[in-house]
Amino acid sequence: MTGRKIKRHFQNYKDLLRPPAIGSLIKGRVIDTIGGNVIVDLENYKTGILSKDDLKFSLKTKGELKEGDEIEVKIVGEENKLGFIPVSFSEAKKDLIWEKLKKMKEDKEILKIKVMSANKGGLIFNIFGIQAFLPVSQLTKENYPKLEDPTPEKIFKELQKFAGKEMDIQVITVEKEKNNLIVKEAEKEK
Image 1: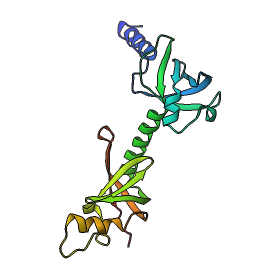
Image 2: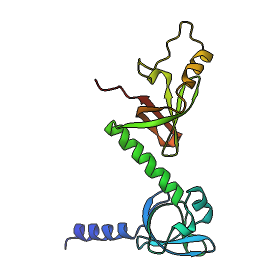
Image 3: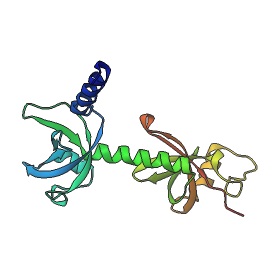
Image 4: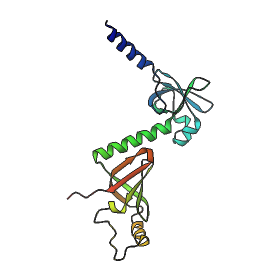
């Protein structure tokens, strides 16, 4: 082996030993529960600990997770004094949802979603637990408020008529860092 090949071989080996960084998504397998926390084997890397508080926020309960279940978690801290890596199921779930929304934008996928509420600027939706906003300017001609003397109050009153109704929408802006999800009303096919 040449010196270059040996160096590359050891670099590849070193990369395998490098622990996943904080913020990484990683698959794990449920091992046990201790004091309400869930112990997770992190892909043969180390052992993670999922707090009971995290489970509460993720709408999962300790009882829903059984030994051997495979779950995706996010590394949220460095190894603690007990040798566990803090992980989050709820943070991983959020990241996966944002990735799904990004893919929906790229694929120009149309969703049929119920309007949750309205404000003076547009309509509000809940897509997989994330609030989405549809500005008035992104309504189709068919649903755009037709007012003789438009004021914010009159526009708001018109938009309130959509609350509780389903609408075909498309994702147009996905900014996870800013928690910003913007949609538009999808044009009806002719």
